[in-house]
Amino acid sequence: MGKRFYTGTQAGVVILGAGPAGLVLGNLLLDRGVDCVILERRSRAAVEGRARAGFLAAHSVRILAENGLGAGVLGRGRTHGTCLFRSDRGEFTLDYGRLGRGEVHTVYPQQELVRDLVAEYLRRGGDLRFETEAEDVSEGRVRVRGGADVTGRYVAGCDGHRGVARRALAARGVSADRWDHGVSWLAVLVQAPPSLAAVGYALHERGFAGHMARTASVTRYYLQCPRGTDSADWSEERIWAELATRMRTAEFGPLHEGAVLEKAVVDLRSDVLESPGAGRLWLAGDAAGLISPSAAKGANLAVLQAELLARALHGALAHGDENGLARYAADCLPRVWRAHEFSHWMSGLLHGPADDSAEARYGRALQYARLESLRTSRTHQDLFAENYTGI
Image (cartoon, rainbow, N blue to C red; front, side, top):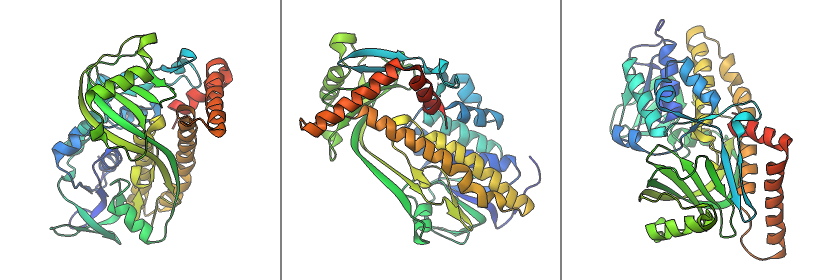
């Protein structure tokens, strides 16, 4: 590490949130000699135990590895290069790791990545304050509930879609472009090994079902459900029965069943801030924009934005050069929108209309036409692979 900037009573950067965006940003800043402090409202146990996404794109793995943050990912992560589609018209597997740019995903549960990043940040001498809730942000000053204010030359909001940083930016008149996909998922984490060698996407007249590997003994499933569904209404028996129906186990074989560890309803919504920051407040990750989980882009966008923002903040603090901050939106928004476009397309592929109206039948026919094109067209397959793994 080189020279430290703005030590003492004022940090170089105050980071709100100890998720992937905040922790990657903090580690990169420390490595560049920038003093920073991370404020996290939850406990360390809650942060390190929260099960979230687990598919890292090649670009994210490169960023982690090149900055000394990839030991866990490279040592314990599992490369994954296929996905499988099922419907009433059969099943096919797409070997996307051999298509497009030839890139694969690395499956590494987000909670394990977070544990790695916390440990490394602390090893590098970082200041990380758990159970410290930010109430307001104004001109580099963060008001902390029940504690002293924390000040920095800049504040980086990595505290999520409902965090105080996003509210502070909205109060300045920064608006967001929004889309409600009109779809909800019951997200289920089960104590059972993966049932498929690939990520599984099942199209069914009762709704979408998804299978995502997490570890050798834990699997994530998704079930499309009506908006307003209460997860408490779904017993383990009902979950496994519905998964069996939609995954067509009578035709393709049974699933490995196990205890349900977690279940929650997720409404698929997306938005993008027209600008991810201004002045002394800059955002990354879900704070800068929410993306639906249909293409596993959220954590990867967070890593991308953290790298770009670290470079820009270092330039401003080390050299007095704010050109990087001025370019931050232009550098990241085209790639953010590319991810959103693919996520939107993927949502249309997976979720067909449910009723029996003429419009619904037309919509389902288009859904299956998209699937057939993906099954038969090498050009479509290459484009899918490039966007599926790209960021």
